[in-house]
Length: 493
Image 1 (cartoon, rainbow, N blue to C red):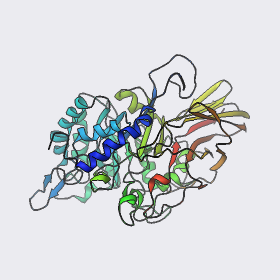
Image 2 (image 1 turned 180 degrees about the vertical axis):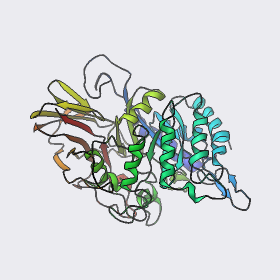
Image 3 (image 1 turned 30 degrees about the horizontal axis):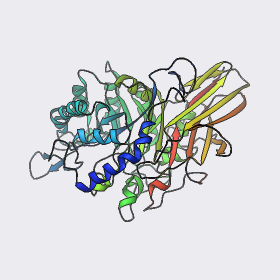
Image 4 (image 1 turned 180 degrees about the horizontal axis):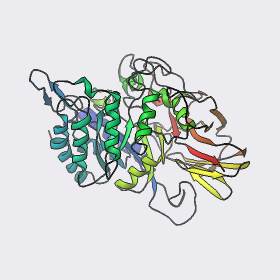
């Protein structure tokens, strides 16, 4: 076995065969200053060429240090590659192959796993940064979240980044103590963890992973619930910033008989997205209707690639989180924190610019704009259809784009609220409705006489479903692709 890990001949054959297919799509991961927007203000198209671009990434990737455990010893002994199997440099190499500019190493734990991360995973991350410098690599972990499911922790790139991860995991991870201690698995303990992270000189970011994987029905939540996520956001609004809109494990339905996309075995995903995101007027819209800065992402949750007998895609092979940022750690992390993010599956698009303008002011994805009462707000949507096939050898195209609007009415009295009845699809467009400028498609729409606060967000699909429907078991994920933008907030003066 080389230092790159024990990748099967069949897997590498598939990887090498895919590299030519995805080269063009990977090349579209950054803005072309001659064609697209030309400054740090997303989608403005004005001013000098800058180093900001849409950078694709993945915040939820497991390596061989997501270990198995030998329960015959006391305490249990970690088994390297006992759960996920690849070295971190292999994950980084594949992230680069599939067009990613950044990634986060997020291994999860067990008894005293904080030492595994500190003494094994972190040194290998340093090696990976040297081996694959084209990919900006963060250190973090998949936090065994007290009182909840799992969450991605992304720590800032600092001299003490490894110590920060160790401090959080050793002090708060619910699976860290041995013997197991149920007092570590409570929601108040998670709030203590968030207060600790909030008070760090350099604050990390926490993203709730696969939030409805344990849900038993539509609006029937499991390890996560709406009140809990509101508590997170209230406690540390610059740390607990959002949730995974599209979970990983999307190859499960493709390779396993009767498999469910995302391994959502209780209640299915909708168009590959979690119900908390995909349900129109659902939980996400209820958070936005409070004016909360609560963002969505997408990830691979890669453990074992489907070519090697697993049920996962490589980082970037199917899902991508695009961040409007410069190619360095701080800019990427701060743009995630600010919601300058859109997500897509299947390389349906590689750039998305949404701009709201009124009275000489404008705002873009993740931003806010203040307008006079009664103002007309012009919304411009501009997106790039990547050249050439995706990693499945197909060339999907956007068939429809939806503008979704909801009212901002302020905090809710019932913190379990998971609906926003004001949310609506304001407009739908197909290819006959947008203008074509080279590889770019542009839509312009006017929200007339805006008199109260609202938010707007964009989604689109390669299919014909007006609303994303429940994904049947065994569905080919490549046939049902969606993209979502994070919102723009419009405040009436």
